Length: 232
Ligand SMILES: Nc1ncnc2c1ncn2[C@@H]1O[C@H](COP(=O)(O)OP(=O)(O)OP(=O)(O)O)[C@@H](O)[C@H]1O
Image (cartoon, rainbow, N blue to C red):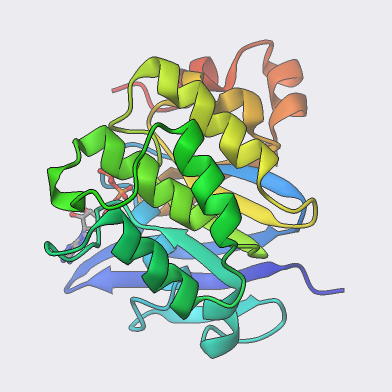
């Protein structure tokens, strides 16, 4: 049976610079997968391709057995690395927008997550702090009953106490057969929830392994293995 995400021989260049090189990845459902690599290694580029935002690549990708398109966009709940709200929007406007836009959006879940995150309705999003914006975006994204969640740096701006809350929200809000693909630099904070990790180095996938067996094999944490692998 086809894996939920299959990537074969994917390459992508910006001008003459090749930033993804012959990437092969098969990702199956029921896993939280860490996409890890130093700055500029190609994580966001890969994520944008999976979300249909970049189309000028070579190689072959299927999501749930189909090429990237309407079907994959319905399956994926995507948290981009930058806020995407319009300046005029309040938290209530954004809730309504998600409710209108996505069939799988659970408004009641979003409202209860907002309460847990200490976020209020009717507040102008541009007046929220960076961390509060991140929490709010994550609330919206995790309130969809999606088959795939792609989270680009979900906790970069939030304080350490809120990070644990966010991890709990991620863990308890995805269906068991779904994929969570998550890019982060805060490996030690998040690694406990990873089932698998992917290391990407200058556009090449240099490692894709089960995180528990990797830790056992190397007798080190994912954070330590990452630091060793990417030592400057
Ligand atoms: N729009 C663009 N035009 C030209 N080059 C780009 C563009 N976007 C990204 N790049 C280049 O592609 C490479 C990969 O960038 P990408 O944003 O995918 O890396 P990343 O792993 O997500 O980095 P970070 O951890 O810093 O967010 C980098 O060399 C970057 O300079």
